[in-house]
Image (cartoon, rainbow, N blue to C red):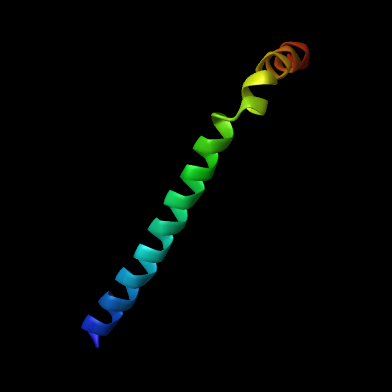
Length: 51
């Protein structure tokens, strides 16, 4: 019984790890995109006015 539970939890953890890696890859891709780099000054300007 415990071995089955451990195996199931390991399977769930592996699935979640893959999802996290995928999301991190997407975030990295967005942060390195040209549009993100181009709009950086606008975002900084917005944060200055927000304060």
